[in-house]
Image (cartoon, rainbow, N blue to C red; front, side, top):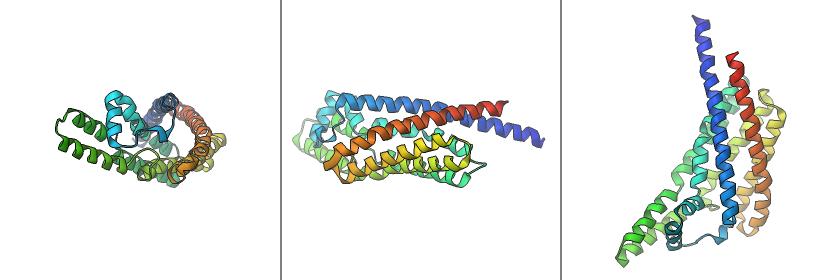
Length: 247
C-alpha cells in the first residue's frame, strides 16, 4: 500500500515537472514577443507619452501598444511562469528545499505586487471613458485619474521597482540553489546567476539613474539572452526529470 502511494506521489510530481516545462516554453515565447515589440517600438522609454491625455490618445490609436507600454505582456509572462518556479522547487525538494522554497515565495510575492500595481487595464478603461464623455468637467476628472494611475506605476518608475526586482531576485536565488542542489548542471546555474545579476543591474539603473539608460540597455541585452538560455536549459532538464519518473 505504501509503495503504491509513493508511486502515485511520484507520478504527481512528474506532472508538475512537465507542466513547468510547458509553462516555461510559453513564457519564452512571451519574452520573444516582448523583445520584438521592444524593437518595433524602439525601446525608448523617454519617447513614450508622458501625460495621461497623450496615453489615452495612444490607447485609442493602438490599444495593444498602449497595453504593452504599461507592461501587460510582462504581467502575463510572470503569471505563466508560476508553474515553472513551482516545478523548480519540486525538483529541489529532496536536495535543497529551503532555498528553493525561498525562491518560490519571493517569485510569488513579486508577481503579486507586479500584478496588483499594474495600471494597463485601468488606463485602457479610462481612455475609453475619456473618449466617449462629452463634458469638460468629466474629461478633467478622467485626466486626473489617469495621471494618478501613471504616478502609481509606469515602466522604469520607482512605483513598479519592487514588482520588477523581486522576481529577478527569485531567479538569482533559484540559480544559486541549482549550483548546490545537484539536480541541474552548473552551466545552467551560472547562466541564471550572471543573467539575473545583469537584469537586476539594468532595473536598478533604469529606476534610479535614467540619465544613463543607454548603459542600462547594454546590461539588459546580454542579461536577457543569458536568462533565456537558462530557461531553455532548465526546461530540458525538467522534461528529463519527468521522463525519468515514469521509468
